[in-house]
Length: 298
Image 1 (cartoon, rainbow, N blue to C red):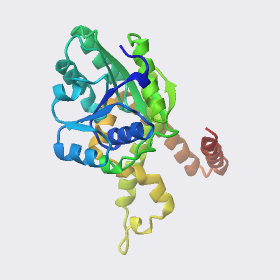
Image 2 (image 1 turned 180 degrees about the horizontal axis):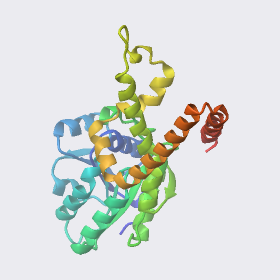
Image 3 (image 1 turned 30 degrees about the horizontal axis):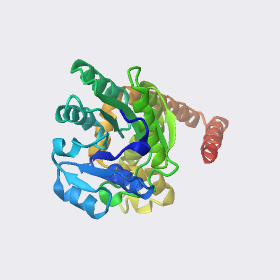
Image 4 (image 1 turned 90 degrees about the vertical axis):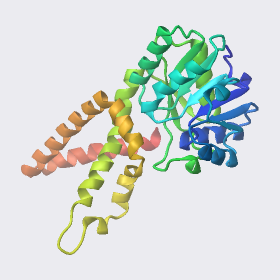
């Protein structure tokens, strides 16, 4: 198995949308000399990726798309990733070594499912490494792909106990080559941290948008007066409902923990309001201000 990304001569990207398209563009811009195949369901989308020069070859056929691949990157919604890994396993010969990674923002259930499947089917030639590049947009599709999407972005790789160390190194090298800053976490630890840092904010933005959207008087709606603060706070609510439903469902246990903590904080704030406790409210706001300003230093 190749354990140095610079030696890779063929990468297959499954799902050439925002993330997959941006990966293809980034690899090319960074000087990747190998071939990039785009594998997807619709040739219309793949042809658009070809026109954008995010990929070199396009196909909807798994065997054709994977016959030369040394590294496969699954860039589909999270609820499709295990099925994609199984389709890969069924499409490559038992003698062909292949490293597989993904870009999903949920890792525990995905890593466990794929590892169990590979072990049960004795797919010793296949090596899966979970990864999560924390780069994206409320926009989707290859039209939104950017050559610099991963530049300076954090990317978390989530090896399991059974993960091959050479496969882990290869996947880490892939994301570093694309410009990302690498971090490593166990899958379950990743899920609880990302539930707080990414999934809960999207949920809050969506609920906030719905709440304000329903607020109206006899003469106007609250959204008529939505200024920069509201727009900045709720921008991510414009993301794909289908994609985010899958994320929330896949990471439900961790997200429910975050919702419980958030509910406790809301209850505390409400109590301060009821008791006209200005000092308590100020302490909450001061702590939030300090934490938010610290983000600029990270």
